[in-house]
Length: 441
Ligand SMILES: [Zn+2]
Image: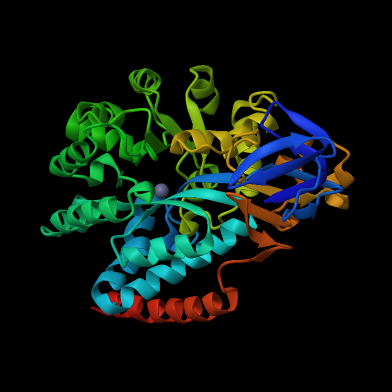
């Protein structure tokens, strides 16, 4: 049981802010919100005087194995970057790292990514990852207390390994049985998946109850390649396999046409906006206003740490908002509150989890941020403008997931950061050597 006392500003959602209230959470859920709630026996009291409390962020699209590539190559478009940067690392992982070592690798790249995300107030995420020591990924999620949803990025045409698809599908089936609540179906993108791969994904999800996420229309080249090779736009192809549903999400969705917009609306799918990655790789700008006007749910994602290179939703909200305003030449095209909604409720809706807002009955997933700092105007301004335009990740003091403290005073509670730093650094050093070996061969 946790009682947050004297909260200066409680941001329930993008429309509702309460001032000078307390919040009680029990058994992972918010049970009371009100003025001067009574102390109960056994309750842990957290003083939130001078603080904003807001829902934890949902990073709706990332690839945590790319923690191995933070700060690498900065000058390539998506296709070249995939071939030159990502391709070499993935080849080195599969060809040079023996199976018995893989869980150690995946555990520490996941744990490192989670440490960064928790400190930035991210309490849930979707990770499109490699089929590589998968149990290590789930173990790191479980150890940390974060809500992590993981899929194997299926790209059988990219890997050009005949046995690859069979192996990946067998592993996906195992993961769906072993970690049913946390496993997502994540084909990479239409051009990288064979018809067989998409058919098998549709078969696994015949009841449309599983979450499915895929990259769609990330670059102009990708969109036109699909039209040229398959005769239809990407979302139309996916619809043909029966993949679109309430639990389907499309990452990027920059170069959509009118038919795809209608399909997105008709099927109630979600879109993930990834502004920083789209800028870094020179991919383009998602026309967000049109999606909002159509009533489509939009979530926010960082994309992988190799094409960002941060897992920071403050940066994502800020750059995503400024990008839309600059490109449309209108300051009121998108508000800070709308951006905040994408980063919280938009992601929670995409996942179908009872989070993203702070009301009685919702999950106790929240962040505590002291406002009395000069760059936050000592909390004097509009709270959404302050969070989107002024706040930085290190302003967050405490983070809770299901009422459990996962960050206190900026320190991650359930993972050993010293151990992660040591192991992760060794793994990255080894990867640079193995990548050189791949380039020489
Ligand atoms: Zn991605």
